[in-house]
Image (cartoon, rainbow, N blue to C red; front, side, top):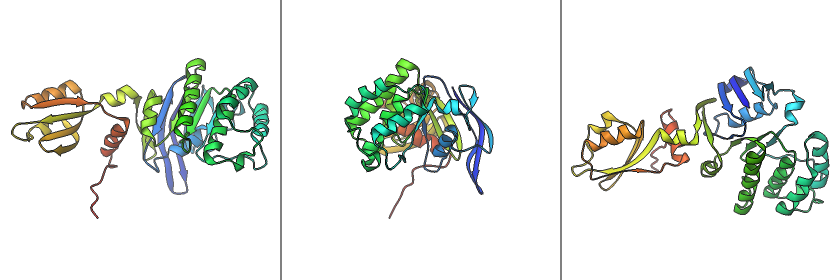
Length: 299
């Protein structure tokens, strides 16, 4: 559905995207994560046709995006920095959307009025950031898009409205095969809604897999040994990080889980358990191998 091939984008001497490639299948919820300055917002603006790549190719449903009105009428972009015309009420904005997007649904608009509960006569620019974000989803979902591109989408929303918004988005994915790409620093929330993840660093996508596969290659293991941690163990497994609390050592190791466990059990551990790994931990330790890691800060 979304295909990005070897895209480079520079601003002056700064290379924001460096031969970046990514693929998002139809009906997929794809989480794009990375540190600040990795290029997430830049690739999103290229995907939406706001920026034009210096080189490389971006297509949605097989068509180039830049200056493609047909594609943009089937795509909705909700940015962290929203813009609405200062004089527009919610109802006036809805009328404008209905003229731009051929699949606009007034019946959806009326149903969602009961969920968002904001007076449609109010001027959007006078609403709080959280209420403006609700309006953005209210209008965006009514366009019945084929593709939704979301940049920090639920920032500013209260917990109840966050759940409502995600429920609406995922309902569209399940019922209509909507393709969703989300950029967010809230990795715990992405873990609940995404089925695929791409990790960006230095203007590239350095890892993209299904969420289960991303977690499947990195493991958290809690272990302890009667005579202390064996020195030879580090030579047999790839340890990304280790921490100790008394005699118990927690390892973050990369590789096949069975081989890692076999290597540990050769040293007769007192305990040896694999613990669940979060997306946040995968993010930290994957990027740690690329030089972006936790620092021991002493003031």
